[in-house]
Image (tube, rainbow, N blue to C red):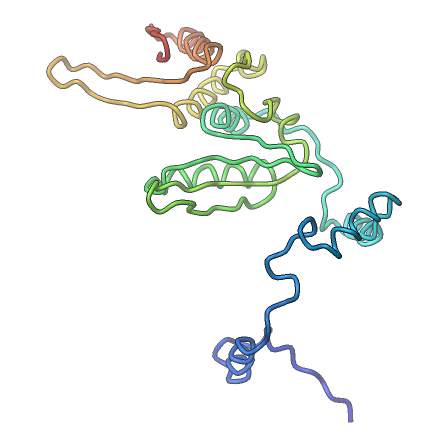
Length: 240
């Protein structure tokens, strides 16, 4: 008679066998690698250096198989030009950060944890454009910051946004956005969602819409875009 082994982690959580298995995990010793990385563990670090020197890729076969069945993306085409892309570009220029790593790139958008609508909107937008669900986590209880983060190859190139610090980089509005009024509105929305504020001065019935940034070229872009849309913006040192 053939016996079938039971995989505990696949059992229902209310199953007694599952509960017994969970309890048994507490008695197990910690893994040998706890607290180490491949750079800090002496034996693993030596193995990594040897593999690099001999140019051995022990995951190549597995990676090629995963690419064939579609579990690992092997092609990263340009994004389709759309209002969604225009808005995300504006958001990344205002509140986003692109970081380069040896094998991939990371895009992070910092959000106010109280603004659930903002977090939901840009998480959904990133998932739609990158075809990958972003990681959303509250990073600091005191500072009330939530980060929406995704890792993928060629993020900087496909968004046409430089990685790293952009405070002194000259930024231009992409021509395809500049020539389409709807795309331009979405581009401004992304920028204003990131760095904008709105207030009303009741005694004079004045509605004030501000955009603040220390990058001179980005301020000029917002000023120019508002003029195209028929507004009459005023410019100060760091504000439109």
